[in-house]
Length: 210
Image 1 (tube, rainbow, N blue to C red):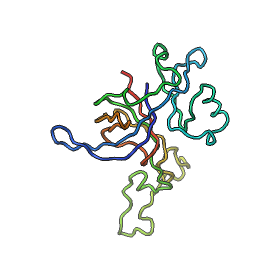
Image 2: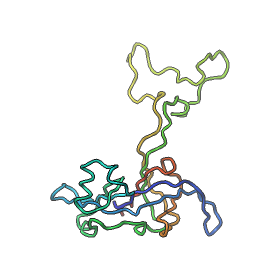
Image 3: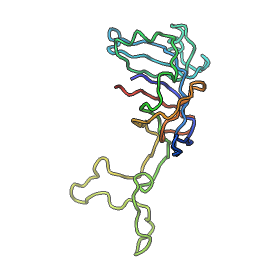
Image 4: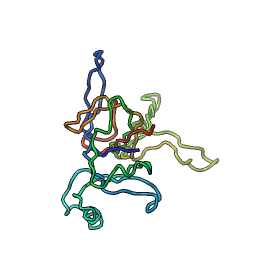
């Protein structure tokens, strides 16, 4: 599934020809550069590695710096692999540039990002618990979780129990988001709905395999 690396610009809205308002997320994608080809003979699968966002060599470690020098490429901050069919692998040469031209309006895509980190959160915020009564003898523990299990049997708390803990900062993929508009001049697309992550967060947009 071919795709691009980019960043989330933010949310806004746009209007359809009928005058309906659509909530959209603006994404800046690429341009990305093919930095490596992977084939079945050497790697056991066929894919291309692409780079995004140029950086100075001083900001990379030696192995990664040597990886780019080997193919006479510029240095990139973000790398990601996209699986491609063995028959299509020859179409993408090292050094080729990938842009938003690969996408079409009204096309559905999968978008992966890192959700906003919320730190340590209680059960009401993390799991949408309703909380306890604000009266009738409730004391101190208005936002607590309550009982979390049995006493004698089974004398333990089951794995996966909804409790307070770290919230967010997870890799999240949203499937089947519709591309509403494409701005080729600014390498931007608008997708209907929300996308995980904060403003300027890195995201990966993948075409859906038909």
